[in-house]
Every structure is written in structure tokens, then in C-alpha cells.
Length: 79
Image 1: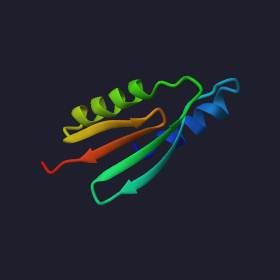
Image 2: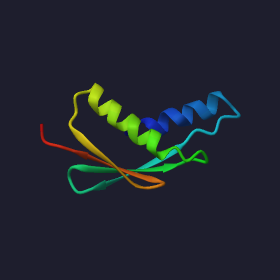
Image 3: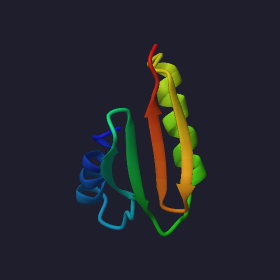
Image 4: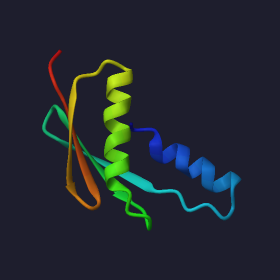
């Protein structure tokens, strides 16, 4: 999850007209990652679904909560 913004920076460098979303991150306690999402498209719920899908794919128990149109909280649960 922490590399998503780096990937989008590379997309911007290789495709001049692209406007991918940008991400910043904050820790909330020891088990929760706040992901701040900035995009003209407003696809925060799609992004939250991608977070859930990644967690399922990697067998990582999490909860994903859309807190606002620009923020998702990913809480990592004890296995």
C-alpha cells in the first residue's frame, strides 16, 4: 500500500497527459494506516475495494473504512 504513490509518480513520468490519484499516509496508533486520497475522479470507494482485495489476496486480515471522500483507514487485525 505504501508504494502506490510511487507507482503513480512513475505513470505520470511515462504518460504525460495522465492524472493519476495521489496518496499520502499517516499512522493512527500501532495498527491503523490512514491513506489520504487526492483525485479529480472521486473514486474513494473503488480505492477502498482495491485495498480490501489486496488484503484478501495476501491473506492479511484488515478492516477498511472510508472516513471521508478523501480518506480511507486500513486497520490491520491480529491473525
